[in-house]
View 1 (cartoon, rainbow, N blue to C red):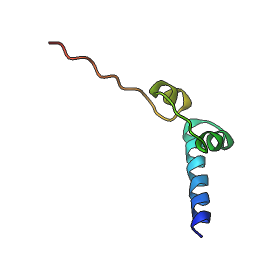
View 2: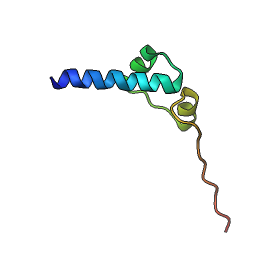
View 3: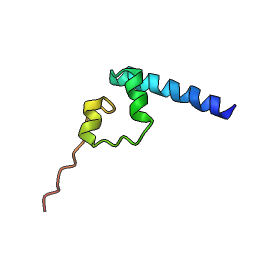
View 4: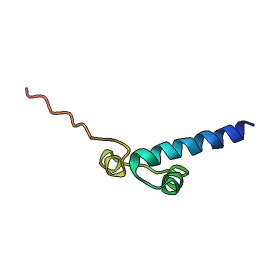
Length: 60
């Protein structure tokens, strides 16, 4: 029962990510089912985030 719930929740997550990133569900599923590390800029390009915030250095 737990395995079925996990599959159901993962499917829902992939559909949500596909909707918000503009990627196909199959691509999101493939990327999410393995280690898929991204830099902040890559995450923005993928559609996972809207913007990258950069902290300005304080002046002394």
